[in-house]
Image (tube, rainbow, N blue to C red; front, side, top):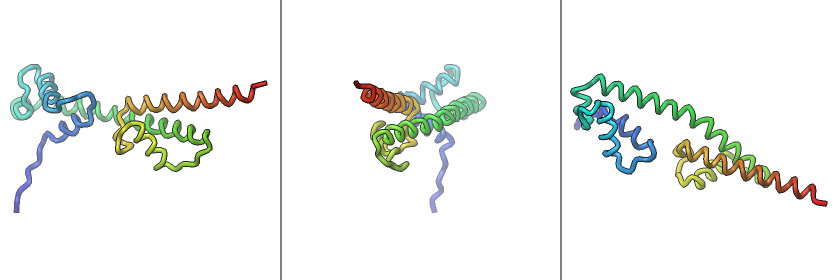
Length: 146
């Protein structure tokens, strides 16, 4: 029987993987630790062992930031879904939720709908909303043609 040890820092690695804009996770981790340790260390283990209060502050701050991002994601997802449904409805295409999420995933180049980052959700929403407005304008101009 083997004993599995748990990594007390797995929350940080999960946070860094979801944070976009980092090319090298190890470099980002070292920079983050260096910042929260006030320049004392760039080692996560050293911060955890020698400066537990600073480690807890980092964890608390990053968890609050992640919760804030999560709170913004849900409304952005719903707006995007509504914009895509509106676009499809305007084209007289009947669709279900899986189809709409598939469109969003292809447009965002993500495999899962919930993996689409906030900035991409907002960008896609604006693109689909502009398409809806353009379609409505085209219809209005067509109906006004004399």
